[in-house]
Image (cartoon, rainbow, N blue to C red; front, side, top):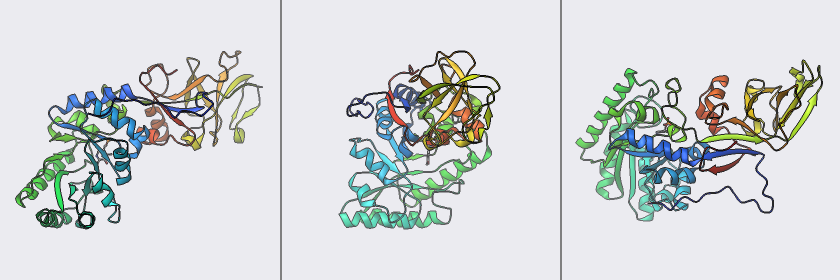
Length: 394
Ligand SMILES: *Cc1c(COP(=O)(O)O)cnc(C)c1O
């Protein structure tokens, strides 16, 4: 088991004012989502995918929470992401699956990190590193079954397996698992999914015929973990669902709870007279005397400039529309003509779980023509990350 979770935001030296811009991560929601995924997985294990700093939710905090809630393993992209988790004291199995041949494989081997290989060249580089430090590397073979991105191609796969047989005999490498990644998991009935499953099963068979014995095999991401129990194999690898974002938005929340709330504090409230333009280029002009609030987050903090005039915030219990352009550091919302009850320092929610009527990340994704993955991973700049254990944020 891992240590009990003890997480707070970075302590501020003298000054303890709430951050101006803040991504609040609800770790109870993460735990809930992991438990839900474990139920769906049945007897299969859950590998929590915490790449890209846990989709920008904080890798160490999310990893600890996920493991405490039932996840058994962790998945990341690079060796440095994996090493960060080890250095934080996390002992669960960690798989890294995208590294160039000159990556620091020795560091991974020393930290007992499982290395995903997609070519004989990757594997040979891992073996060289293992020999140089006199240890055995644990590898997982990534096979391309139709995504045509990472993973060994049909041409490469037999070469990789051949090399692996030799290196296992030499004792320099040990095969732990074989895995692949789906191209159409968000369309659970798509025929390509079954084609990929069949190719995956065939690839496992090829490895077994060559005398290899993978401890486990895994295929499913979030969407498949929630909709295709027949593809669970020994383990599922959910990412986005851990963070509470539906892998198939058309199917609603699927019981998941969004973990990230992006909020900012009002920096200024002022009156603007009818006929005055607001923000660069005066794209918005007041039709009547009105009050506006200034919020200290801009495109440098992850509020896409393309959202200008196209999103609301929840402020003072009411949705307030963005007006004018999004600037590097700030945006403006309209409070309307009545003397406002909104005060400097109040919290405006840009997106969150949606429970209090605030927008959700999917709303931004729809407006921007993208996916919520990009919305939550795009939060950056001066935004401070803090953790909460409940949904009461406003
Ligand atoms: C990112 C990733 C996942 C998780 O995908 P989600 O759609 O976020 O669930 C699983 N496996 C691999 C190989 C990945 O790169």
